[in-house]
Image 1 (cartoon, rainbow, N blue to C red):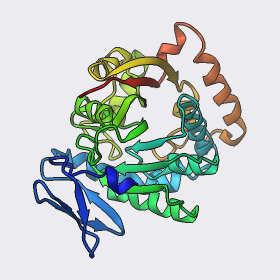
Image 2 (image 1 turned 180 degrees about the vertical axis):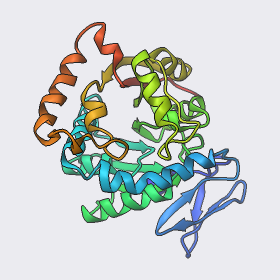
Image 3 (image 1 turned 90 degrees about the vertical axis):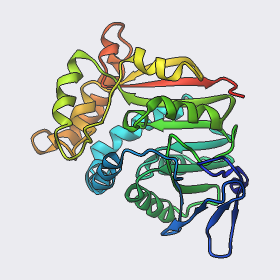
Length: 304
């Protein structure tokens, strides 16, 4: 079924497979190969930020071996994933757009997801290799598939998915507006996009400027105010809900690969309290807008 949805990222022509696993476009005659069994569906028209791709390839082992390995950090991110999945109907086709090392796909499998199909795309082959290993260890069902793709030129037909998750994606793209347009194109009209991105506030501006000077961030790394993110989505979506996430727990628990506060604080003990504190602050008018992150649930409008 997924093969029927695949399209050439350059011209959206149909793709056919040959005996060696390559895919060919019937319209523009482009050919797409694979690496380590992962389809590589990035076309010649993509305008990638290659330094951002290199940064993502570099940090992938830090994500895998530190950020999602330490129990208290992993528990924090699992809580955020649960908050996002609670906002959508997961029974249909799902795209994890910018899937990284596959922790969201693993989250779906561990909670017993039984939808139609789920696709994870990412521009970083380093991230995808970890996602591939993760799904293999979980006896990856046939409904899950990974591929290398450009979020600004997705290799899928129009109206292919019911839900698109973009967890920390748009702020990495050279053109967030193009990324939003592509999400809307591959969603069915009325489909749901769940978008998580950094929230720019007076409190977060200085720490993020300092973080961008480290090797874990590309110089083009962005963050948005809520109004800016809504404007990016507005041409293609109706924003139905805005949720703010991450206050005290976010910097203390979420990013030990950058600053490991667990070396000086008993975070294994404090983590449940910090997560509950964040959830409480998120309900307080005025204070909640000072979150480090925001989740928007947006409904796709017809684009044809």
